[in-house]
Image 1 (spheres, rainbow, N blue to C red):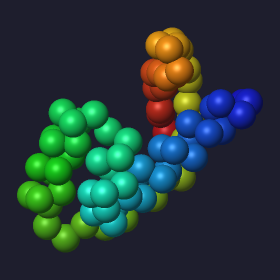
Image 2: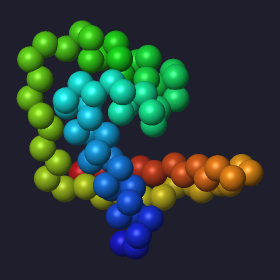
Image 3: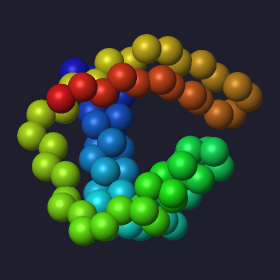
Amino acid sequence: PGPIIDNAKRQFRALQDAYDRGDSTTLSEVMTPEMFAEVSRDLAGRGKHEPTQVLRLDAEILEATTEGRQHWMSVRFTG
């Protein structure tokens, strides 16, 4: 799959783990304010939470752009 896809999958798993643990600090560091606000509402409203098991994860790069020194990539995850 290549190093970019492998890294995207690692990032996905790390974010899923942070969500499962309710780790708002980690989530806020990598999400837009709008996305973090929505996820925060989800975390605040959830009851007992069972950790997510990611048995299979595929990733596809949809778009990649560079703005100055920042790189943005849209990735579709399925599994």
